Image 1: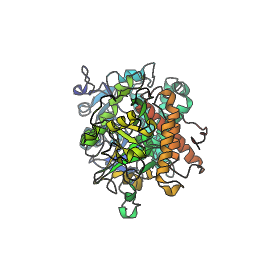
Image 2 (image 1 turned 90 degrees about the vertical axis):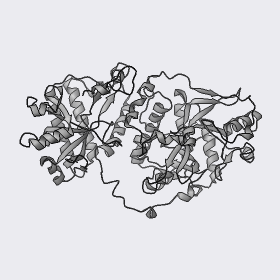
Image 3 (image 1 turned 120 degrees about the vertical axis):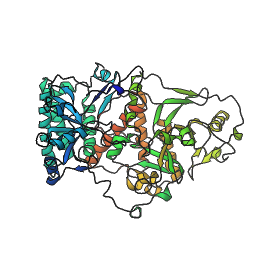
Image 4 (image 1 turned 60 degrees about the horizontal axis):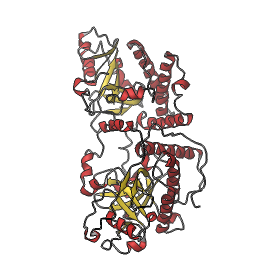
Length: 567
């Protein structure tokens, strides 16, 4: 598809686009009605009949940008193979190849309304959303180093006929009640992909030979997870829950500073697809207010290091969450998100340039610990990081004494950066009793979800997280935190390729110490789901923290992991 002139890239403007396209083989079970604002499931025959009555239009997912889930509303385009010699068709259409053209959904509906004997909805294929590539991006993805796309020379009539056959196959999957519609639609799309390979006499094994078998399995499984929610869409899921908060568990009294929260297993589809950093995660709550819950992820070291004391190994800087500390403290983090809490669609593609780096040594932060200074007189901590320690003797000195503020009743303290450095230099605090975090997680409250948002929404409604309670085991809260701290501090290092696997193993082990279910046997289905979740977490780490998305091998494995550290 063409990119309008006003959106073309010029000069160094990365906010513009070079190419735009739509996915051809992602048919959904959805119909959009003529009012362009009502989308329904195509599950019953009377709904399917809407298409033939000109009242409903089948929808395919064309891409993420301005797609069906966009907070800005979906943008629909229609492919067609109508005779362009007809002036009413030609004036509303943009030619692609041969007689294959596209127009807006509004223009297509107008044509059907004005010329019902000549044009009907079956003459169009409707795509919600699209894909875009920045200048140079598609060339890189098609280059020898990545080889992610194949260019095909196909005439417009052949493309249209293939699309029509694909539509028929998908309709049979939708009508085949009692089977997994999402997986069926995905399989139909895969069959279309294979047919195009046949056209150029290329085997599937050759087309995927750049990928190790285990990594290809991972991609296929993640695609299945995506299809479950995005091709077989349940439009009524969000509206069918009329339960009052009174019918739900209420973990409010358990959530406060010092509370440990861990991810539940098996991971939900949403966590696998959108929140992989929370897989096997442990969260330490820093703050609970009427406006939000604030916490930090404990078990993800980054590729950066903090050199706190001369002559000693640097500490790994840990990923605490996506919101940077200064913007949390001054509240400006809200400006980075829309009113619905979602980032701008176009930000999904902003990371392209960042993928062009060559990796290299991890970043290292150095602190001037010899400057002296009046630490006790500091009313505010302007550090860009979160500093946490577990030394009870230091903590007993309180905030004014440089020991920090205790997080609830836990044996952990939030300490100012300068106080932490001074305690390290004086020998009062050991490096193994200190952790440093970049960023925080914020769960806002208000008119959100079923119970007003906050961390409670994740625990009691979405069931994605759970409060770590000593009722699960014979240890006190402090013993659990101590065990988690020991595993993470002793067995995790600054993130590099060589430490990735060890860091992941330690993260999982720390997560497991928070439950009494370590030795509980898993069903085959849950065991398979856990392997998929672990691979998804590794993929997230490779892209976002290691920043080596293309050289990080992510694959599904059946091997059993070794015993817990120290157990």
